[in-house]
Image (cartoon, rainbow, N blue to C red; front, side, top):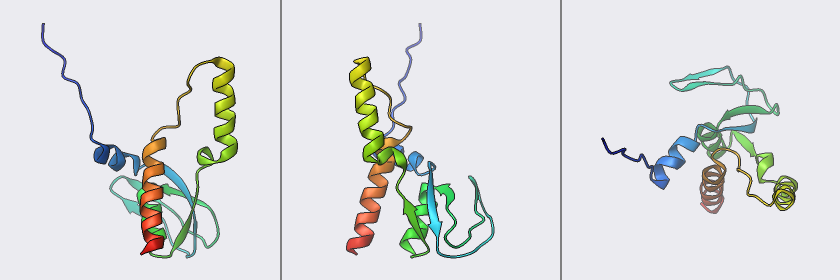
Length: 116
């Protein structure tokens, strides 16, 4: 019988994959749809919320071209509702996909941009 090899990712690799997670930005510019190897983003209109991959959001935020709307699942109401549901069911519920990695990217990159 052949042994099964476990596939594991480093924290950096998990963060890399989480950067494809969709987040909402509010652009401060107008522009067309942009084609990337991994998909499309846009069109962009001033003050019109647009969903883009996390890495695009961080890039545009760093250039002063957009603000990032914090995902609802990081909000107090969502987390309190999740905690209540867990207490009622007496079991842990799954967080949204890439929850911790997205939080890490937003926190680390945006705090450093603000300090820099």
